[in-house]
Image (cartoon, rainbow, N blue to C red; front, side, top):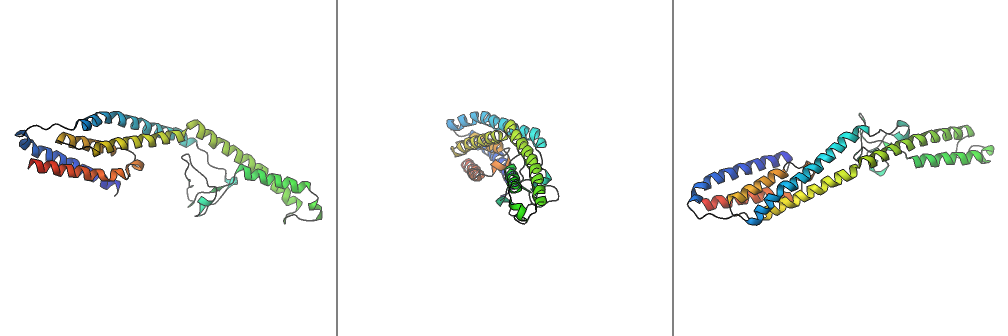
Length: 251
């Protein structure tokens, strides 16, 4: 189900809850007043603090991204090459969040050669140039001049790659982005668990139904990444069942 559909369904359920409450008022007024489930009320009272904790974690991750993403460097062209559709099998260029990044006009992320690889290539060129093999002719199909050119290129690219890797490592560590998104995810999980507790409690009156509708509304403001959960998939149905039960009791 799409996010838009989830929001439409939630608005419908909230509307039905309000209508059921209004319809039930006159009938319930003549009946003995029921007491709401105290555990449900307790969980509802705790919900604002749980939501506030989530909001703080959400805001912290957003602020971290806003501050550090613009500072994330692009890999120098000389240490990259055009990527392919199976780029995940090779070292690919990553963005601040750790996922693959695609440059404008390019279908796939670029492959990035590491400083370690360039250092290996430079050391290999030095060994060949110091050996006596070149006196007898080309080594691995390359002349001395070609090996010298290879050494110059490998040394230059090693310096570029080392600088790029050092800067990406520095930003990753200073920003502590991993810590921010993990805290956000943990706060979302805690909020989901709390809303689940609310939804799983029996609601004895319309007050309890409103509590559940409000909890669903809170969950609707969570980032989309965390809203599409297995447990949350049943909440709309639970509220719909409660609406029908209360409406039936009032009839």
